Image 1: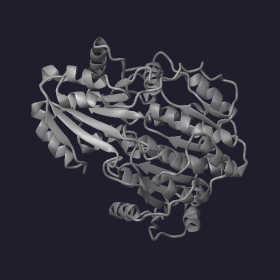
Image 2: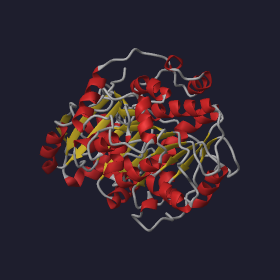
Image 3: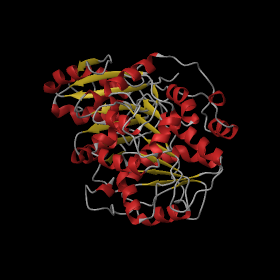
Image 4: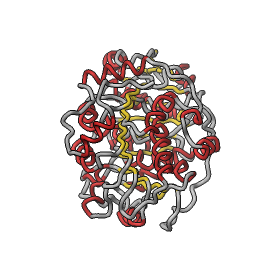
Length: 473
């Protein structure tokens, strides 16, 4: 069930768009949006199959091939409205299945039009805040697109412009992009948004965190008025309410379960310990079976901890903003495949990590607030799996940790440990699911035209406007 906002009909609002007027936006006030989302979350739609939701047989078969038989909550809620062509405002946590919640109806609607892609004019645009998320969204949507003869390309900074330009000039149905690199292509004339029929913003709140809202607004204004717009976000603060109010028309409003991600399958624990024991305790728990993801505050701290773990025999990598795209892609691929089962990341990288099967998330350094705690923790207990979240606290950090947890609505236990062989540490170290290590990936995809995903080619360094420039993301 979706929540309507009492707005004018879609036909009238679309007509006003074409007349160049958006002053009578039907989207409710900010407080109204929050109330509408809360009301939407309180409704329980009937459980339906993908076929019941209106997806084609080809897409249902491709989902089955990937072992996906039942829609998640956010998919069950949003797909019918997205298929109908309505604007959609969705509130959903990471790991809820929202990529396919917008990807499946997008692919279905493009396939129904039977209109070929034109050079430099994509038919759909998915905007993401980070390079890693752009590629992972493309990897998720790509198999669905190829099932119905559509093409996908990922466009982001830190990778060569050349292959991206060639793909865009040949014509591509779906572009998954970061804001900076997309604007680079628009300025160079290698990409035009004038024929975009479906526009999706994924993780809009993280866009705001990274300072991308001005670019997002410019891109919104470049999208044709009749285009369908879908905005997904975990929260509506930091300017996201205004974006939704200004740029969505009569949206279907949906909210999947909120609060602590995967609360039913996620366990929260905390160890209080002295600084001298911190690395050794971290190494002990990192040696368990399964994938373990550590979060730290700084880029230097990520490199240092990964090195300290390797010195103790733990295969680990690091991912952060100072790593070039090739290094980031390789570290994430090795973690995903299980060849390096431990990854150390900064918060900036946290929202770009979407890997199923992470057994343990460790807050090696405490997060800034309860929202960052939830974003970090959401890397585990995905797709119905169990997961453990562990915080390593110095004595002076314990009080702030307890206060922060009151904002997460999650239960947790805190134990004082004084050495790596403490029974509680050994209990965590004994857990996890043994990994099946995947073989090394095949050679890069050819630049020749093909259906599905076209990957950007990493460079030795970002070819943007210098470190921190908009093309570097």
